[in-house]
Image (cartoon, rainbow, N blue to C red; front, side, top):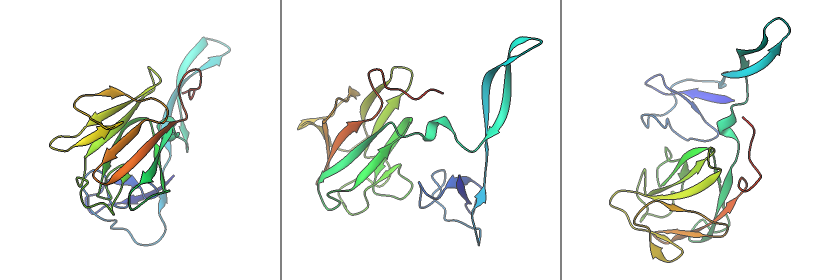
Length: 174
């Protein structure tokens, strides 16, 4: 994974974020990004003890797997796609948003709304932001709602169509 270090010392993936998602500060390092490995906990068979929980280093973290996509069907970024990952995917205009739509000034800067993928239930949800107007299939999104294939989320002048990868029997093994 390629990471940057912000002015406050936070690590972040520069392929996913333009600035630090924790504090919004820019990269403070110069030169090539560092390589960081994640610690993964798993169960492995061991001859003496049967099964044992062990940790090991891995370059791949399960929460980085794509779970689905939003495709911009209307708006200034028409034709562009946005990956949905495990957990919260905040939609906003700022580079610290998980899904950044910077060309639409009517979208809140950091959290207009969110799309959440819950790996336990293997389902997706639309979550409204505070003080913003979001439409799900043409109706105002007032509370958390489940998402289905081809549902559309409209934020300001941008319409995003939802395409799941995970769902039904398809799920990433952790």
